[in-house]
Amino acid sequence: MTQLQLQGIRKTFPSAGGIHTAIHDLDLHTEEGEFISLLGPSGCGKTTTLNCVAGFELPDAGSVRVDGQDITHLPPERRDMGMVFQNYALFPHLDVQRNLAFGLEMRGLDKASMTTRIKEVLAMVQLSSMADRFPRQLSGGQQQRVALARALVIEPRLLLLDEPLANLDAVLREEMRIFIRQLQQRVGITTLYVTHDQAEAMVMSDRVAVMMGGKILQFDVPEAIYMRPRSVEVAQFIGRSNLIDGQVESVTGSCASAGSPASARIRTSLGWVDAGTDQPLTTGQSVTVSVRPEAIHFRDDGPYRGTVQSTYFLGSTVEHTVSCTQGQTLLVQTAPAQRVAAGVNVHFEFEPGHAWSIAAAA
Ligand SMILES: Nc1ncnc2c1ncn2[C@@H]1O[C@H](COP(=O)(O)OP(=O)(O)O)[C@@H](O)[C@H]1O
Ligand SMILES: [Mg+2]
Image 1 (tube, rainbow, N blue to C red):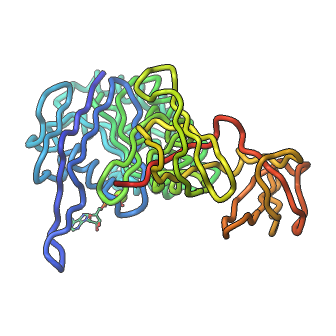
Image 2: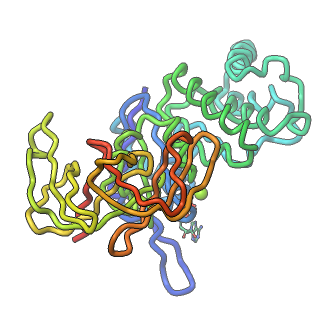
């Protein structure tokens, strides 16, 4: 298994006004066998980053290392990487087994080993009966499984995927998430996966790198990205969040001592809020408290007050917009049985441990 290290990667492109920096001094280190997603909005630099790893782009600065070996200047065909694209990029005039044979012939494998290896990989992607079909005779999902098989057949050191599910319909997309993740775990291959779909990144990944504007804003396990966002941008991009401005009144615990997470008492327009933090906050500092809609509960003796403005029935949940003092509006998600009608004055609380404070950017 393989480790990937990106160090100080910068990539610029010429643009109308001069040069455009697509990637800013990006660092990313993976562990062996990890499934890592680059997640961010369109244009944030995901594909450019992946292309620097694959060798399709040469960074202006920084290095790409695989197991310590500097491969920044190696051509793509010498990097031993399997690549899967959004549009499958299969050879249309070759049947499935010859699509798979291509990379093996390039490596000079003998006929018998090739046949065995192709059989093995087709079984892995559950396409054993489709070896003689041409790409046009396959559904989108099947074509993407062939693309996956073609990437894996060469036993690459890294698997790279660029929005591979974006062309599939919603139901198939969800099936394929699990399929790819299970296959990756079975093969044990270190994987870099590009997507703008946060649910996809959360479900599939060991760790997610949230990218914006050519930078990684946060790189962590999915739970941490969701529960403990480091910036307002991450809190807003991942799921939905209520953001409440305030000032630090006091801090307890220390983020430096492992096992004793820090908590801060924040003065907000709603009242006092106790919120977790992993940043070194000081008294009087401005922060934003992030609370997810499902972590707010209506309760008659809850510490905060507001008025329900509107409710939306979504089937398994109900969403409420609640207006509070000083123009603060909160989104509250409950089970249908806890639905509160528009116009009702409510008390509510934040689920303990589910308010999180984010220091204002310096
Ligand atoms: N070959 C190129 N020439 C000029 N600009 C590019 C080129 N490739 C990417 N860019 C620009 O770099 C930025 C990042 O692009 P990209 O990595 O494709 O984003 P993503 O994959 O996250 O949507 C965008 O602003 C894009 O327009
Ligand atoms: Mg892209």
